[in-house]
Image (cartoon, rainbow, N blue to C red; front, side):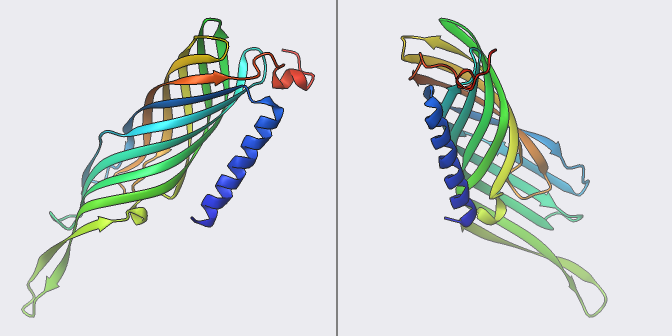
Length: 246
């Protein structure tokens, strides 16, 4: 475990402890599907490529503290599993540089956000916040090709192309850490005083994880469903306990 990851986890646990000290209100679990959409693609005429995600999923733990009658302060911790097929070719000559690789990698994401909630039996909510991601592990398999110019004694030259198979850890190709912003909305159905279920649709703007000129960023569409357990429902909201009146 790197020093950055240890520092991040220590800071995260300290924040959870602080929220719990104020009287944690809700704990939830969501599972869902990730559909990344690529943004800001390169306009280099010598570059061609494609990036196709398939079967990317995530699981998120949700902690929310009631701040006012209509606002919560939330912390999400999610494990996101991406599957990406990435193909690129860069150079003025065909085959000068190629990458044709399947990536599988996991990010641990932390999101901190305010959330506004309206309704009684059926509640509508929306939130916006900041997301931090840490690369936990990765794997790749595929081929990398490159060519070099060979000069002949008679002044002629040609390109020699070579290709190799690669397999194993993909950390050198992926971002170790990224920061993004997100916005989400959903519906929550109250089953009892303690239990509820919800469906959630969120968007998350992030840097493209592969170190490449193909795309600079992506927009993750996250669709999920889950359940929430409510505790301390009758306890005064956090800001009310601090003397704030809505």
